[in-house]
Length: 329
Image 1 (cartoon, helix red, strand yellow):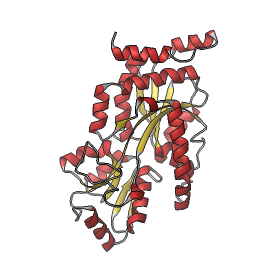
Image 2 (tube, rainbow, N blue to C red):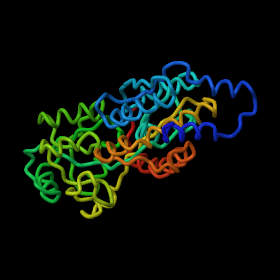
Image 3 (cartoon, rainbow, N blue to C red):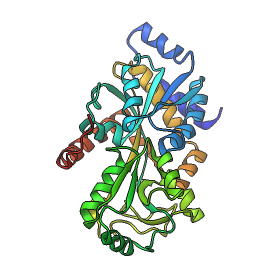
């Protein structure tokens, strides 16, 4: 038997003994049909890349297809609301990130609670953002860029994946740290935003490494900084915000998987085991590294770790977001 497969089975059977026969039967029969994994952003974005890498291996581990569905709009809140309303039976899972499960709780009036209406399953991966611009922007480094932006306040356009998304918030922090001003242009996700940047319709944006690195490597965009304290192994030539003396721009984009509130613990455990199995694959890890992402250490791929991180990020970011008075009704 394949070593990783044995490990997956061990993770399931190692779960605390189930006290009643019905729970044991449910664990044995789940899943009996395909599982929907809701990505609340368009295809081609960072969550989509991660989801499709993971879904294939999770399908093999669970013995049923894990199908990624893109349900987009309102900075991820439409797809996330669908997960919150779904039956708590393990057949609808929700992908999310800092924006959907932290920032949206302040910025949007939501029909669900970002913390209390979901069961955490696993912390998946994380990575920084890159500041990129169209190739004909008249700047070759961050100092040149800031000088150019200061020559015409609000003349530069800055793409976002929607109001209140991580790329929007870090753009606001960049304005505050440098004294520049943009015209923010919201899109329905990172993928359509970067396509307009490549077409020259917008000037610049912060974006996820998973989406932007291919364009950086091809020379299709200029890049100025990475929101990390150390350089990315996938793009070691890009200076960090710490090197450039912008410590307030340190930001890690993290991704997680949730189920609707009330999903039984034995099902959560089985899905978590499939995630751990999926992220343990050497090919998956190599592809994540190539995209500037890092799979969470195995000891952090737990429901408890995801819940603790979400609570800590809410405590950190909600006061900041409220002070910026960003609100979408």
